[in-house]
Image (tube, rainbow, N blue to C red; front, side):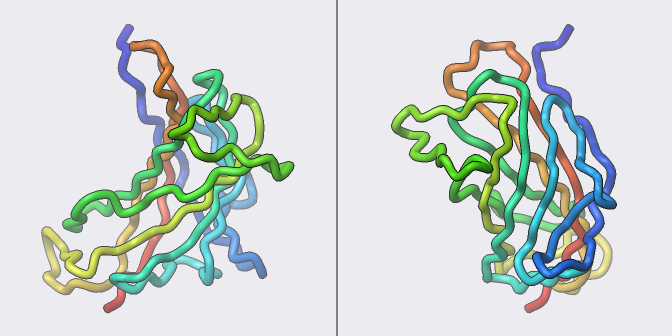
Length: 176
């Protein structure tokens, strides 16, 4: 048995037109490897593709839960765009709060969030102004389907212990 975490690909996320600009998987939660995403909200996006201007930040929120490890110190959330040259990480987390308003923050000070609770991760997607296609059409704008990998993590986790992961897709329209 491998000690490496397996990435479980989940169904493509579709956007439902709502006042809160909610991205959901046809109204059902996304179930992944020891993690669930109940809702994704992208600011100003009512249907796919979501428009993202290069060099600007697009706020979004993810409601999620996880079962392993027992506590986490931080959440890794990375976006990648196949066939596009994406320098560095395009996504970073800014805040993590439980659904009842108790904040789990300042991970550098050792705060931890327990498993089997609902959390909201507030983050931002950023498209580098130099983002370019690596194959096919050489235009630097247009539609791209991004993959998103979400991983709750703990610095105290013993080596080899598997954690939670979840991945999903959102179609973006990159504009200058």
